[in-house]
Image (cartoon, rainbow, N blue to C red):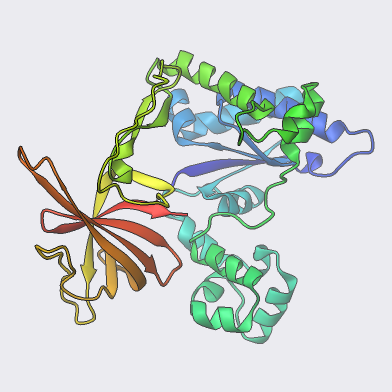
Length: 359
């Protein structure tokens, strides 16, 4: 997960009667966009930006911190609190505490936080009575026990505590983007256009301007976009092309027999990840010559020491391609894990591969 640099300007976090908080925050964002085009406002007084790119450009993290602090001083004459961590939840906490975490330190930092940082008073009160005082203590509780005792909202916080979700519900101000557009004097009719039916919104225009700036800085291949085309498996149907390159309006009308039916995974991995699928007796699950499984899947091993129980599966769906040439035999399998994650696996050349993740 990418490290985020979070900026916390406390004087701008409170609304002022004259509305100057929004205008001043907009000035800060515009100044920061000169340093990094991917500045993201979270709510008044808080914004984030990915650290890796600016760090490479300016020659190190400390150089980025110096440039960011100076930008805020030049605009408002205020000092800004900075923090670095992985994920929005931990990045905001790091900024409020003035902590810069190296890669791999976020988990320990998150677990050490007080249970109250999850923002749920009833949970914090109940936790004190049960002797659960930290986020780590809460994360160690069994998911089923949390679901039995608490509400669904607390279940979401449990996923945040475990690191499965990277931000709290409501941590972002969903109305802030519209307010910033109004402060810029832009047409607010774009607020009602979500581009589902093809309209262009004000957010689309800002994204286009940001893409132009990045492409000028990094070259024509600096911004890539995904495009769909014909294919049988989800990972075969998407490709990355330079943003702004011409595209064909001709639709692919080929039938593609054997195409994996929907829904398609939200994330399709360009480089599949090797995994292991095991049965209840820790034996390897294989796909036979007739396209059936050798045993019922019970466990998915994602990496050494990282295991998930399989609670449901569908498939496999065998796929034989290019029989006239070298030939390629695959079989896809959908699995639902005890953690709530849904994944698409592919069996090929005697191994299982993770090729897609469902939302």
